Image (cartoon, rainbow, N blue to C red; front, side):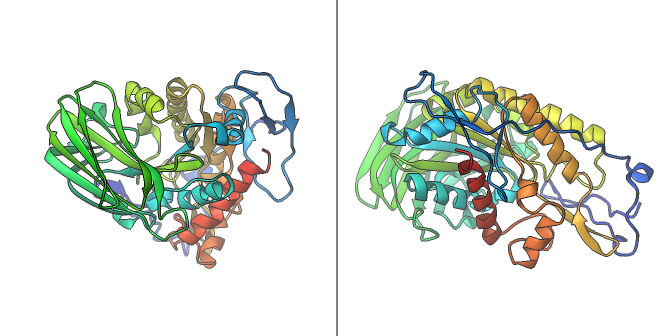
Length: 437
């Protein structure tokens, strides 16, 4: 009764505020919201990595234990298609591939504005090569707050899964957004000096679907132009320009009601790239609403070697119950199964909920339901034979984000990290991936 009513701004529910948390002792869960039973998670198997010389050729399994002090990824795939072996194999064969190794990273506001993903991308590009920031939405979403790329757009109207009144689910793309154009529009992308990999790229593409012929023109570095006359198709299409670029402008003309644009990309031709698909307010379940054919089209046009799902901030809170957490992982299992169907050869990595703290009786500690949800997410990864990373543990466990806030790496909402915190967390994830390779 001492929680303020739910408050929403622009369709996003703000965090719960307990106005008496400073003076009341912590309530026993079975007296207020019910005890949340922490599930017993399956034992972690020995980390394995298959170093296959050629695709489909059997190879010995190399076993490598997790180093002390490192939070390692846990591969529950039992050698299946969605374990780490295929991702490690792609990294090992990176020089032989005719495209970059790609990671698609879906998440909530924790990774908004390229927080954390920019540092994970940079660490991988430092080790394996590559440049560019990957996916950039066509319209004015969070691009203005993204320091890794400078974006100017005109003529694109944004439609997001979080904006139900103007959103048609069947039209959405891989980022749960689509952009419409009344006639013509343009987007200009400039590199930045945020890190050494953000300033230039070697390939840029635009992804879209159109029911009528349209014209798309790319201008590279304010110089060379290339125009594409695109025919109507029911499938996702893309057009691409290559060359050393620090700036690219895309213009479209002839677009109408039957045309949807999804995004542009700034990629290397070799190396690694990480696409950030952040959606503020999302718990991840809405991903199941992306049309499967759209994802299959993307898998053909833009093959991914790893799919990362990091959600939970919007799936738990002080009012969470055991049943609500179980229902959540049941719904997320539908997302995992859909991704398996659409990306049959990609590693699937479940990154657990991050730490989220609240003040109770004068102390700051992990919010009720967080640790339990992390355990349910780990059990979900094991049940679905995919890969798991315990981000809550990597952040320090109970009260981890409050300690990060004290070091200037997170906000005093004890929910979100900043770019300094993103670098810290990205290194934890990178080390967890590489330690058992």
